[in-house]
Image (cartoon, rainbow, N blue to C red; front, side, top):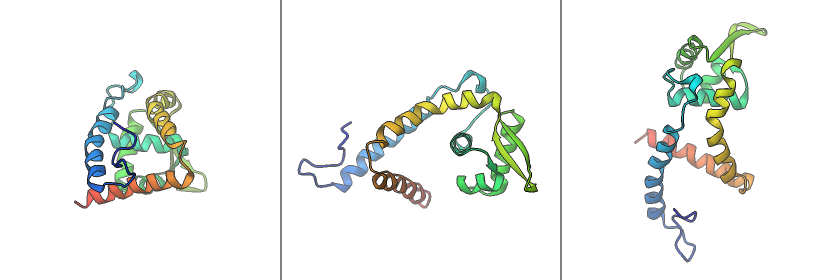
Amino acid sequence: MSTNAGLREDGDDDLDRSIRDLLLLMPQIMGRVKRLPVPPELAGMELTPRHLSLLSLLLFDGSMTVNELAGRLGVAPTTASLMIGDLSRKGILTRRENEADRRQKIVDIADAHRGAIETWLAPGARAWRRVLAPLSAAERRLFVTTMMAYHEAAEQV
């Protein structure tokens, strides 16, 4: 597919063509993500895309509380707590008390699985780095904001 999908030869954007191109592209992207091989250490643990999002946050942003994870994932704290409990029972995550507030738990990726998770997420991170690096900070922000807006709009349909 052309990197100028949706652009006519005269440079004017054709909205319907762009929408068509994106509707064709999105299933291909999702299919590619679903085909990422799960590392042997994580095989059979029934990880879902939500788990992948949670693991990505912890990998890139470091340990955080259940409420912080819930906020960043856009889910209720109860939902985040259930996912964290599931991954903790499988040994993928660790939970420890927050020294500043013992009622809170700090969640992180277990050292035993950090390498496998990094390996699993690396191809996607490299691909995003390759396509986003040439863009200006404003262009990257616009792209990310547009993807987030699409996600929100698609939920309302």
